[in-house]
Image 1: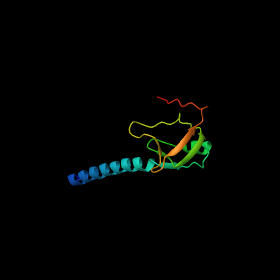
Image 2 (image 1 turned 90 degrees about the horizontal axis):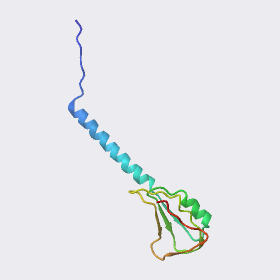
Image 3 (image 1 turned 180 degrees about the horizontal axis):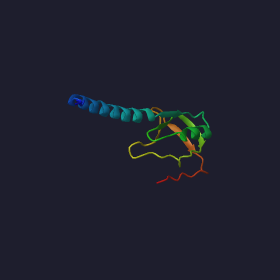
Image 4 (image 1 turned 30 degrees about the horizontal axis):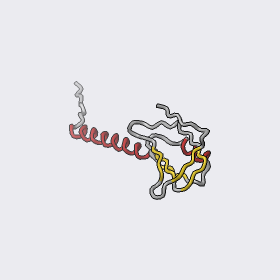
Length: 113
């Protein structure tokens, strides 16, 4: 006659594991959302090509900030930008004196809607 021993997980251990799992999932979701969004600051000393290289790296939640100054004949390539409903891509001027952008009239912006 063999006796069988069944090991059961105490109810408090299951509850604690669920709580720990939920905490880790929430932490991961918040951490990845915060870790991905970046702010990029460009200056008027940069060429359109340099600014477009920054634009090409923008992802949902990112911010592109133009520092004060005059940007002459700026030709921005914005058609590839894809924000989301909850994570927009923001392009703005810096606080303080506003940047002045003169647009290259040979370029037409057609948003992908």
